[in-house]
Image (cartoon, rainbow, N blue to C red; front, side, top):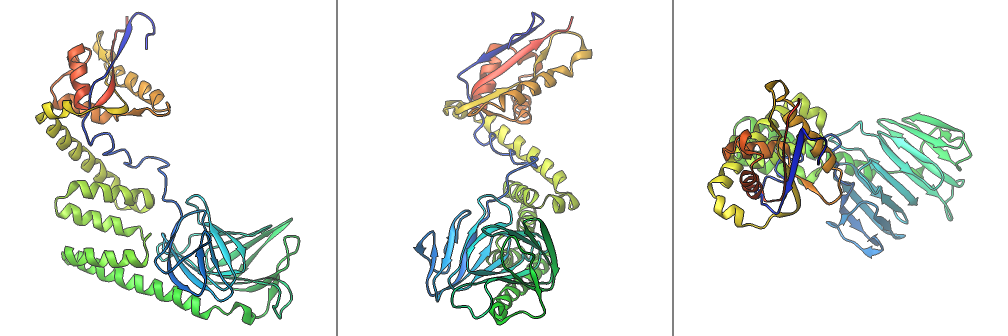
Length: 405
């Protein structure tokens, strides 16, 4: 970049970078960090059960946007990553949402939805062909089609929560009620009692039993953790993960155990995961402060190793498409010293928008510069720039100086 004559920058390459630094703290509480895609595991499969048209058995995974179906005598129970349980009765089909939203499409038949133990107030959205339902409770749906003794329509029941039924021109809010819904143009009809068609005692019992089992296992694991029995606590947390894979407290306590064992790299990874999945809980537990200290400590260690093994590091090929931006050197009055990092930050922000370009974090670059004892005065020197770039395994490095007159 060349503006007017007081400011000069140079782009040099190829040069090189520190192996693990390019990804170490990239996920540290980034705003809008992507959540995990909605997916689940088949925990029960009886009769004909298919995933994407292929026969499936218990243990099979269901990815987002994939169709799960049951035959005329088939039944399936799906446990999602957040711990919610969905049971599919015979002759039914559903498709999970393509993203990470708590949403699915009921293609035909019915379903029984038991909300998550980890997030019991979480709202689900059930899309139908021409209408939708939002709920935070136990929801049972069943279509009365050919061969059904009742009047045609969609029958449903909501317990331990409420359901918002949205249709053309309005919506109905139901709490602990049963209903019959003819079509998108009609207001749902509230029923005095749930018809036998909605008998889901077995599937609700399964959902409640899974929730209770997971809660008991989690309580036991936390008791072991508080008693300092880390090995037993980890085994217990693993049991909870099998029951409710999406329980957000798991990486938190696994991370704390890693900290107690001085495994800072694992602690950083696990606590970052917890902060992404439960940002409010992480803030309450002051996890961001811990992450900042861990990330800084890990960076210092990685950089120290890279500098100590400089000959090995520079011999490693640079990371494709990588670029490092160093703080600019102030050639003028000290009053403008703060502009050095500000100019670098502006360039980093612009380069980060370039597809296929991997910009190394400014903090990592600065830590390496300090550890390598390059100093501010040497940053604009060609030899120093090339050396720092090789240590970071960056293909290119941006250096520059400025002077305000």
